[in-house]
Image 1 (cartoon, rainbow, N blue to C red):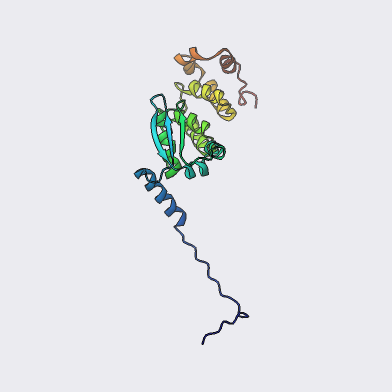
Image 2: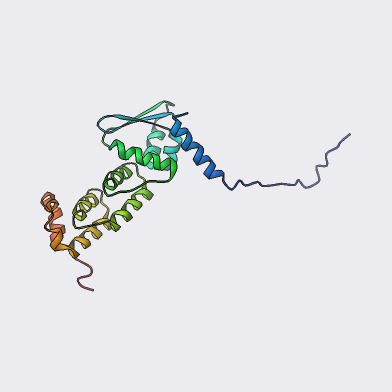
Length: 197
């Protein structure tokens, strides 16, 4: 007959799986790619492109979706995001699952806009860094207008500083003509911090 000695100190063992987080991420990515167990449908862009996703992934990584899902208690969810470019949203959602996104000059503005709407602060900062490293006389005013629109002061200042440093080239660009009156004043009367050290 076996008796338990309750007075004896219980031994414990803590097992930690080194690849646990990566394993979960990979499995969620596979479920997303196979469109398995998705509980949310997003209709994006003017063409209402359908993207099926897992609400738990969106809630965990996006303040925007977290707010939406806290307000809605139903298990079947449909979200309309016609104001967001569908191809940019797909890239951003792929990023939420995989942790990887490819930025290009042709896509960075749409990804920036999507990250802003979805409140993805880390992705916004990545876009900001990319823009900062790829500013040219041809695009600095477009990026300045984007920064103005979303109240991103560091990007506004960097674009204006770049425009100031390359004024003769920038002023020849056609996008000067689409600046609003306030943007034109900011551009023309920018106080360059390098001017008065």
